[in-house]
Length: 152
Image (cartoon, rainbow, N blue to C red; front, side, top):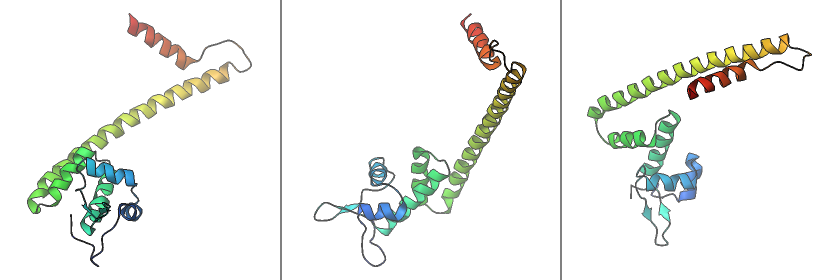
């Protein structure tokens, strides 16, 4: 068990959940997946969290907000207790995450452009065939052609 709160008190799982905005189930999940050390237990078997545990949960949530996976967070947590030598490992992890975000942003921009073109085709066809009952959706026509070519 980590040290107690500055006033010597510990927090129960519901209290730490409320304090951090993390569900009780998430706290148990963090514990099962070794993101959070198993807390001490009261005589009645209740989990007792310390100020260190509270700080760790805030740290985990911050990293999740930045888009890091549980595996990456586990690496950060192992580095967290080290000194300045851990800085180069942290810098590499941050750099890798930034590269990943740039690649995802590029892929999303490409998808956005493709969707704009498809929407434009739909709008043009709807304007051209206004009042007519026949005609085909140009996007579905292209998708069907792609599907047939892929089957060949």
